Amino acid sequence: MQLKKDRDKRVKSGHPWIFNNELEKVEKCEPGTVIDVCDSNQQFIGRGYYNPHSLISIRLLTRNPFEKINKEFFYKRIMHSWEYRKTIYPQDDSYRLVYSEGDFLPGLIIDKYSNHLVIQILTAGMDKWKQTIIQVLQEILNPDCIYERSDSPIRSLEQLEPKSQVLFGKLHTNLTVQLDGIRFQIDIQEGQKTGFFFDHRDNRRSIKKWVMDKTVLDLFCGTGAWSLYAAHYGAKKVIGIDSSESALELANTNSVLNAHSSVCSFILEDAFDGALDLIQKKECFDIVICDPPAFAKSKKHLPVALKGYQNINRLAIQLLKPDGILITSTCSYHVTRELLSDILSKCSSKEKRILQLLRYGTQSMDHPILLTVPETEYLKCMTLKVK
Image (cartoon, rainbow, N blue to C red; front, side, top):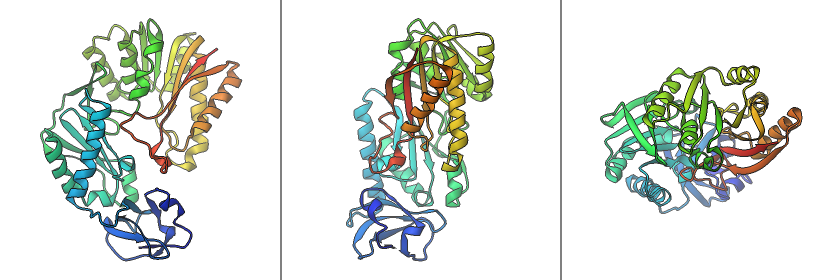
């Protein structure tokens, strides 16, 4: 495949994506076919997989002309990812093992839950190598189970059907893992994403310095990760609110698992409505955690999303005592750090409260960010003192 003249700057700078309008010559081949890419001067740029049905036509796997895409390639990449995780989390057995472009395996996500692996395949190119990936994972990690949770809507853009199935071994339905001394029961079949959100791990750890003997409100609490970290670090009262009944069932289970049921309570309600109810009851908290889902899944949804983030953060600020702590985040790639700062500045002005930034965080280290691929940085988390 050949790129159009003057359309290769971004790719040559390190970005692995090539869009269909950047291609000069298009060859006929099946989705997922591995092809070589060259610039308008016929100079080799990289080797990747091609999908004629996708807006992102090519995702590069290597820039080494001598590196073949085969079982050895996947073995080396996955082994390298595993060695890195063992370095950053030497005492742990649960983390994101492969983070797509961040680990130079675009379209592939693998989460490790102790001796269970959950894979998510997002592209036709990776789907073609699924059996090879399974073999490599068996050889490197010898798991009890490999489960596929390829049910993301993104697959439809690649003309792939959703898949949720056991690929190898036997699934343990009451799977429990431990992170930072806290036990979590994981539902890898029905839970959100692959069953747990590892990406906030460093941000959750950061609350240790704030929560001792404090009251905490956890909006969009899901299965209770933030709530349990708060209780683990000494909060005297934690209330979690979420609209998912199944998520709250796990949150309550996890609370009992960690002997925090006397501290943690969970309310089944929309987070916006729940916050309004608490305001009407004149409730106030020392700390409010606001970790909503991605309101902006695409750029066209951004205006509505920004209003949503502003509304929920205004409610969160109203629920805080003077000098309270707001921990707020967005997992929407399209909501940049600057946009989040602007949202919070507007909230500050409208609520006549001063916000003092104490910490800025992003995704945990098992979600590595490539500076040449801004899409690999999606999570922004701010800790603020509210005067």
